[in-house]
Length: 431
Ligand code: ATP
Ligand code: MG
Image 1 (cartoon, protein in one colour):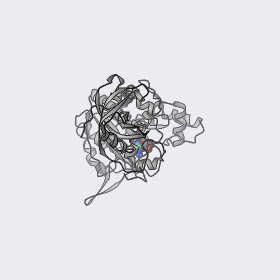
Image 2 (cartoon, helix red, strand yellow; image 1 turned 90 degrees about the vertical axis):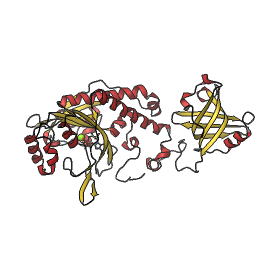
Image 3 (tube, helix red, strand yellow; image 1 turned 135 degrees about the vertical axis):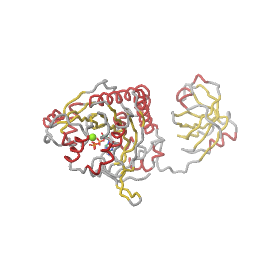
Image 4 (cartoon, helix red, strand yellow; image 1 turned 60 degrees about the horizontal axis):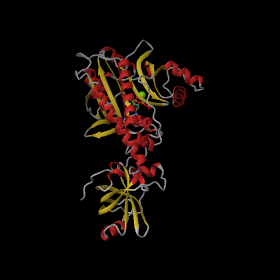
């Protein structure tokens, strides 16, 4: 097998006369009798292979003539500067190796001459991903995850992995997937929350985890999946304000990284990403309710924000903003109260999309047991978790940031399915 020396994007007209080996897929092929043009596509872009009958060996010309779209090839050839060719150069082939043929017709056209529905695209995701525009989403997602990890490393976080097979719910709730686990009842983890907190009693001090969360969301929405990826942190000797600052840092840095390093991909997606300020606006839950009411949404104090409320608030606020000071009664039991009505919880929103939830947590054993009871849950179901609060638990805070939703924001996608390679929703368990 000939081995690639250059990606398409690494070749320039200045390399005129040099020999290179490129490898990829036949994006398109055009035969005009005595000359054949092949556009070869690799991860980084496309190059034109130009084969004039008189200038290439007979065997090579024959092989090129036999090619069809999406065949996998490697081409050794000479770079020739040519103003008329795309990117100002073409490659005159010396040797062509057909690494694999593609069956035709293709179930999906990666060259996008024929547009396809999302369902068909997801059915044939490996082909869909050959489209530069689709790949751009996952290059931006990668850039975000890389930046997020780098921020965590520089802030002294330790990467951890907690179990996804669990014995009980994080918060009670009905969003769990039951599984058969030998003779016991078990579930897929809906959040690493309880484990992150237990680790605060371990002295690891600052931990992060990037891992799947599973939720039996019944409804088909454009922002929910049944398997999502959560970027989770927990920090000890910290309060809600510290957690908010860390979230701002992580989100800001990721926006800068994508803005600076993924211009090509943003352009392919036609998405004008704006780098946010380093600190985001903050409104209280009460103010959020006021905004929703003023804009004609029917909502009562003490209710979670409905879709309509989120939309109304999002229209008024725009960009990234926090909603802070939530009523204690609508937040999970582990949330630290602020007074007898409000708690130290926050949500990070982007327009009308919630992308993160977090809070300072309760670190006092008795208070936690009381809070579990107040939510109508049984403390006995939380024995292993509660033990960690008995022998020296520091104050702590943290959050969970949806990687898929954050990717929607960074890439300008309206449907979360676009931001996940193989999405899992109510109707999709394959591929
Ligand atoms: P929502 O109210 O939008 O359903 P949530 O409040 O139930 O979200 P949290 O439990 O706060 O979600 O989870 C933290 C973050 O994880 C959310 O802000 C979101 O970014 C992400 N997330 C939660 N559930 C899902 C899901 N089903 N699909 C995709 N992302 C999710
Ligand atoms: Mg939430």
